[in-house]
Length: 366
Image (cartoon, rainbow, N blue to C red; front, side, top):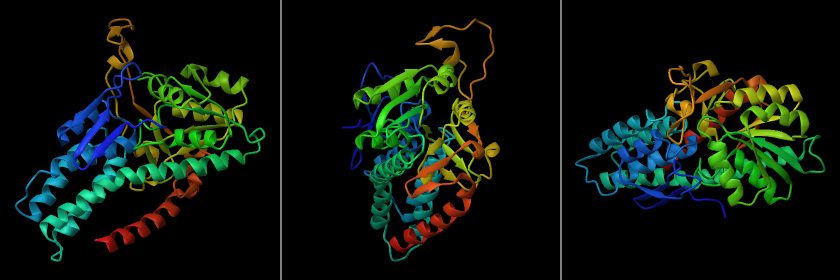
């Protein structure tokens, strides 16, 4: 059974505090949007899909007991609260997309004379709560599609794959199962996983703390490697594929992911190892033409200079600590989505068609 990092039941929300992992497993109550903002900003919860889900559910928690005077007050409350949540971690696009979808729904319902206030509130809450179930379903689809593609590769030794992954993309970064780690889980479940290597993912150590925690929990054959050992690993081991997640994918297929992803893609290209990005369509931002337009969050110097609050760097040294980097589409073999494997160079056309169809379906539900 995979880990459950988000626990929710009709207005009650708890998250697994990832700042305490792997030594302690403690769940924190999220009682308000402000609690949600703090949990996201402090990285008690992280991973683009999980950020959107926890952010939206923190709004649902506030909405349940609240009494609104009219539909316009409800619409304004939804818009203001969600726009605040977007600012907690600006690089991950899922919160921005969820905000757009929920606020658009609120606006349409607010001016629909056939819908009363209570019905409007119920529809918004229902839309938010569906995100949790949909994310798990989407992740499992990503896992199956990605696993199938890897098994069919020429370099997959008798259908037995050796995978390298970076950062954390499992149950701790999503509603459950995972994106890149979902692909790895699907390989294992079908008896096609020989071994998985995970990086430390400096400086926040999501790989060593979180991915390793999930791999051990699920009893997957796995090994932790230093970020600086990736080139040597690809040189000496027969790695079938690299599979990573994404915090945002630009229209041209350029991808923002945890710092260190870009250099792994470069090394993978040099060694002829396929490099896949596993990402739900909700991480694709067609309003961003290319990776150079994606805002990159810069974090505290202390993440580099200190370990467990003990300084390890020379006092007085300046630091540069971007949380993400951009992998050009030219280095990506394929983007694994819940609707199939996409060529990065054909991403904009295919995703545009799907999102237009999805919008039509959403409108008919109102």
